[in-house]
Length: 139
Image 1: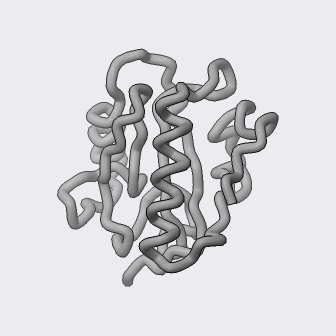
Image 2: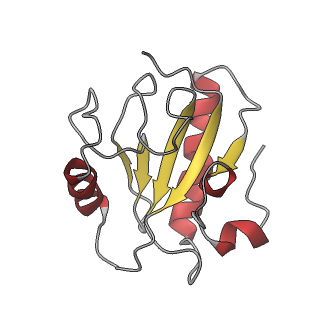
């Protein structure tokens, strides 16, 4: 079944480590038996943004996600390194997230594609308090 994205769903790693986190997340998702993407990753997010703003593409836009139960065939999952209950995203992450969402919305010809949060669909605090107290919706 092909992903037909209608919205973005934002996540955080919950990890306050300052080291790059993509490899650790990919290994954890492999251990949890998440499906392998067409790009060869187990990471359930379509994209992951490190603290320095580096964007890692783990799944094609048409690949099934493995990030939000019940939404993996109709969304783009974007994870960010950090725990935003206790810290803020870096400026580099914020700029990368904004640019990434704008580029994907343009690619999908959906300029008003909504940005949602993991807690809206699951009993979780992800992606953290920072997103509850800041105007983070770009569109």
